[in-house]
Amino acid sequence: MAGSAATTNTKPMNLKLRVWRQPNRQTEGQIVEYPIKDISPDMSCLEMLDVLNEDLLHQGQDPVAFDHDCREGICGSCDLFINGRSHGPEKGTTTCQLHMRKFSDGDTITVEPWRANAFPINKDLSVDRSAFDRIIQAGGYVSVNTGGAPDGNEIPIPKDIADRAFEAATCIACGACVAACKNASAMLFVSAKVSQLALLPQGQVEAKTRVENMVAQMDIEGFGACSNIGSCAAECPVGISLENIAILNREYLVAKATSNTLA
Image (cartoon, rainbow, N blue to C red; front, side, top):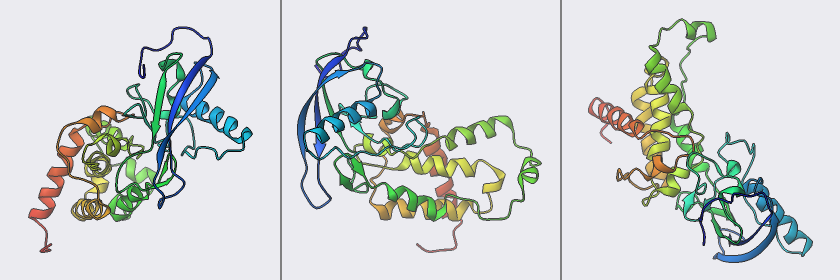
């Protein structure tokens, strides 16, 4: 049974993988089943996929495409939907840090890409998340001259504010929030990037244009609306709080209420 209790021994496991295969954006994809043997419980999920790809290459088949980079739970590249959950069954963990001991011998594991219109599939499990990049480019930065590091450190910031800004800044932009949301909303991601700067004095100069532009770009990209269910925060691997969405809503309402534009 998929998602059963974690194995308690160190014996190699035999598993059945159900993997989404799609050669390109234009071709319809499908689930393909692969048996895989002698998987160590100490392997990460990505290492398990590496083993699968080695087997496929030896058989003369096309390996499974998936995204990865640092494999340390930092970069947010390992965006996989495992057994119906973003990054898999372990809370607060990215796919690359999900170890196979969280599964049991004989399990069936279904691996799919993020599902969102704004995240088109490149191939197999690899998706195009450049929509996030365009949202950041729309306003997720400080362009005013804030001086060097010593100048910035001279601005007194209460510790609780600094801590909240730092917590928002820990968002790794993996897209788990989008994959977990029934509306494919990017509100948790956008709110983290807005809150990170809205809480600090360095971000106040561009606060109004920032939130207006980032929300507008989010809508242009085709992300869905937030329905406040909270599945985004529940599945976030770094624990971004729903409080950031409240900050985003407040910043947006203030910006619109005092805006000089009619849009």
